[in-house]
Image (cartoon, rainbow, N blue to C red; front, side, top):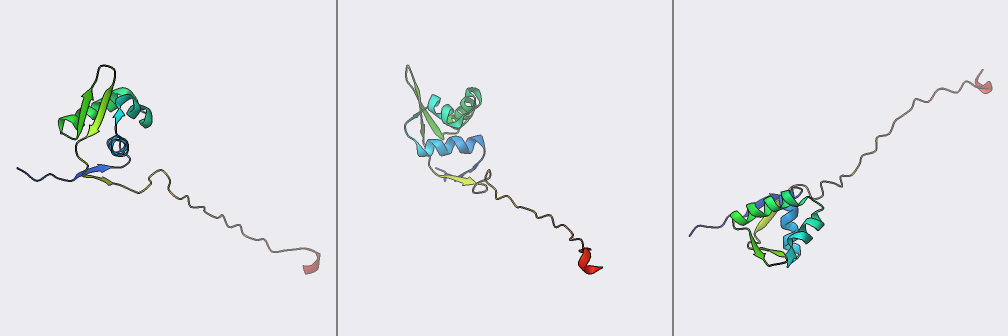
Length: 106
């Protein structure tokens, strides 16, 4: 029996977003997952099939709903902490001050 490797997933990718939601909420249906991701159904279904093939996700098919469950929890998320909220840097525009040439200096 081999040693299981730690799974590394990028946080901002669709894979990372799916796995993070599956880690946080159980039980969850496929429709609820698609709604939380705000994504289209077909790409999410393709990713779930991929996860099912590698043994990461278990799919329970009921007559009216499809439930998803994580089989492994040894997932390591990589990437910046918050890629969408980078701090903006304000650049000042320094204007040259013209010397005063008023009445006092003539």
